[in-house]
Amino acid sequence: MLNYLHEKSQEVKPSTLWSKYSMIKAVLSVKENIEINKFSRVIAFLKRNSVGYEPTKSKVLTRQEIDTFLTNADDMKHLLIKVALLFGVCGACRREELHSLKIQDIVQKDEECLIITIPDTKSNIKRVFPVIAKGKAVNGLELYRKFLRLRPETVQHDYFFICYRNGKCTVQRVGIHSFTKMPSVVAEFLNLPNPKEYTGHCFRRSSASLAADSDVDLISLKRLGGWNYFFCNIIIVFF
Image (cartoon, rainbow, N blue to C red; front, top):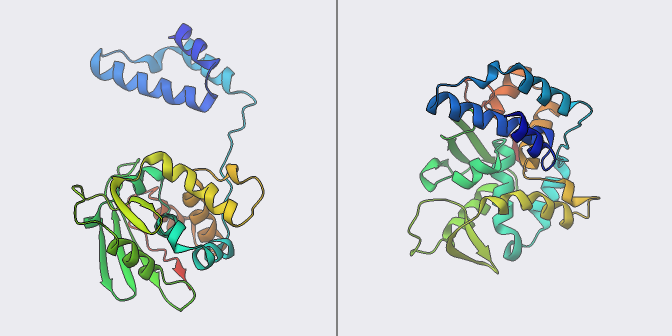
């Protein structure tokens, strides 16, 4: 284990090394009944390797920046990203959750409200959140309906996000790495500095930042991101 982790430490970041250790630990525990969390020298090596490391965090988008993109970006080119941004920020969604979202997970409650369920999350906590549309500047539900109307009848899967180019949808599902790049596309459109620093975690961090700026309590903030066993009760409204 020490030899393997030492070799990998030359190639990956300390945070990634911890992830690899965690995966190996789970596999060995189930398949071989070996508990490597008792290997004190391995844990000591991982801790030493992490000394001085500062993880890079994605930059966040402000409410004004989000509204500007939703209002001014051309639907012909950016409709897919607009809908992903809307859902991602309203529900504090990870890229994996957007990638796995299915049509049946989205229910239109009335003319001004969608109810979206995220059944499969990283923490195995089902989340339910609303998307509310009010006002005239940005109508999130109209963006959703417009994207849904473009869905070809020949699509043979039920994943919601499908590829979109030049005003038309294809039958192909959007790849997970495409969601990683979307925040940087938004940042480039807004002429923000260092757009590459807006990573795939941007929508989720932006959602938490907006909620914190709204002076919500800690419990409600945890509910928003699914950090405990409650449904989300924070509503982010786009005007």
